[in-house]
Length: 583
Image 1 (tube, rainbow, N blue to C red):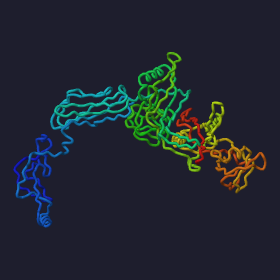
Image 2: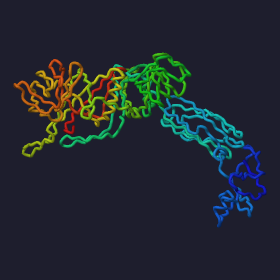
Image 3: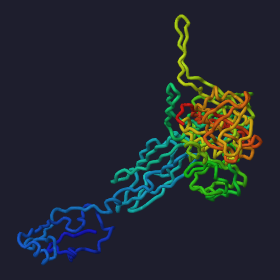
Image 4: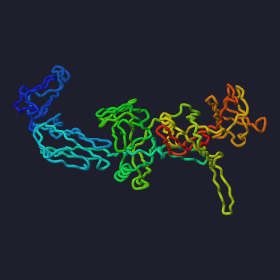
């Protein structure tokens, strides 16, 4: 509100007194303002103030007058040169306003249209005369210039974004108007094309998780392990085999988009719509527990390679997805619903053509975002580390490799001698696990995330019948009689062979640590003494298998899961026995 400059009387600045002059014009309104020509009123803004500092009786005079300072009554308050206080108007009016000024599109999976508002936030008419564009390929504005704008007039523009253009979107539109500073609209995002071709289910479909860790091994086998990444990189590999339009569509995808980011459906974690999904609705009814959906992530309703619809996830509930924008088409029940991940192809992709209309390509997609799962270990522990009791798949042989840490020195005259750095070998064994059902798969996946590659150790049995019980053990005894295997002479209760896991036929198990071993009553048996007694005894008929129990770690940072279907997977992984004795 404006203040008119008039003659000023003497005004005392007493506490609680409104210092506004009687001739202040309360009838002015916003439309009457003409900018900086007016003097804006704030208390004492634009006036000289004089403070009298009492020299005698300071406290008494302040109490008497009830003020902390006052304008000297012997002098008039006179206006100085006109000043202007910054107000809400300065921050909001007098310019062009764009709402929103930033369009963060995220992943652009298909052509999109967004609405922005341009407002002439001034009290004078103006004209939009031009638009300066920077990196705006594939982005259009529906406006014709010049465009007159009345005072306080707002117009809406449609911003069209297509999938054609640079992979990374960082466009700027600078709107120029008469007598006003330029105002900018920024558009950001990433153009993504859906890789909608179905994998060939007769070929392998693998998921590789790759952590990064560092393992330093000393001469005696002691290890120092350190994780360099918390989450793994993910690579999905499969083969696309097809003919006619599909295989030529694959050829065009590779030709025009191989160097860019694809939206890759998680075929191995596909869910299905439990009810029809109608156009203009914001929900999809499907199983969301292990499907890999993320809030703010991408998803797809898939019908065929050329008939699908992508969506962005706004919320995840048990059995329901909430979408950020409504669906554009109707989808029947049982339609596959999948989460998508942004992924890239390598610089070189090979294809094989059987004839001019039939071909295939082996593809490996690298996720551009890390996969994150909540680590979860076994609830059962032994000596401070989790215990893995998951039997391997015995369809294929279980391979093992023993490696000795020795150094061999040979002179020019072929004289040889060796230095043994560790008196026990390093054992690497191959394990295969069948993962049936998404519940079992996710439990195993969380166990892998708890391992962080080669870093976090765990206890695991050898799954071999390393000892055979030769006689019953009476209740209260702390020893067992087993068939002679040379334990006393060769194993000697050393690291890696000093713990036993006894599997019982009733499904339970017992764990004992060997304290020492001795010869049995005859040459065919040995007596193995353990650290705990068998309170209920141990009968030969009750024992299924006695295995060595060892502390292991994964032998590699990469773990590969071979998906045989969306409900069955096979994981082959090597485990290394730790024998440094610090357990």
